[in-house]
Image (cartoon, rainbow, N blue to C red; front, side):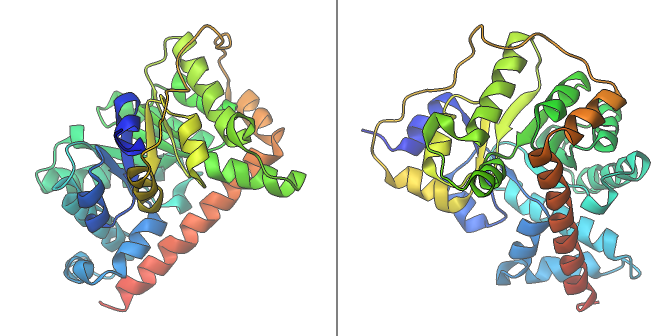
Length: 308
């Protein structure tokens, strides 16, 4: 019997949710994702010390630029050991400014261009706010593919698909966390609200012919991953990837396209904002996620400032 990780790779593209090169090299995912929190962890690793110094050099005190340069430098190193794509995130503090998000995304892709990295190997990560989705729509039309992150609601997923974004990252574990706390109980298997959210989005996309890739993210346990075996992609932490690699049990495909998807719906700005407002879990987790990424961005800026 092959490991659960190898079985999962038969149904789903496996993505590493880390900036740890050693873990990526060992576990051999197709793609990798980073975010401000993961970059902050990577910055503490000795192997990235030179990249931090290089990111600061010549920035003239522009810490935002230094962070972007460090993120792209880490992305370049990761691309040396994976065959697929790296996702690099726009500063979360720009999540409610379409124009500023576009400018920062264009700078990130420009830095990859300067490094000789083709656009087909990069996804620009953007928070799935209304403003972020509009920025992604313009980037996609310009040939820059995007990964819409911090996605907690069906409304966000529907709007992303209509905007033609390449990929979405619904956050399974954070949805699970909210409902576990709110209802004071645990959830297992198919009853997990995070699993149910991704399964609903997946069926909706397939039923309506959307090409947007569904990549489940933010897992808390192996059960959540196993329930979503068959999803387009899953981005998984090194710890959970290792647990899958060590487990020789059977892993059947549990998520597959069928006729259960809902009818296509299109949301204008007012309908999108109302649907998000009407979902307390999504409202709280989106706001919290943006705040947490913003705080880690600030910590990374402080770390870079200390090296200037």
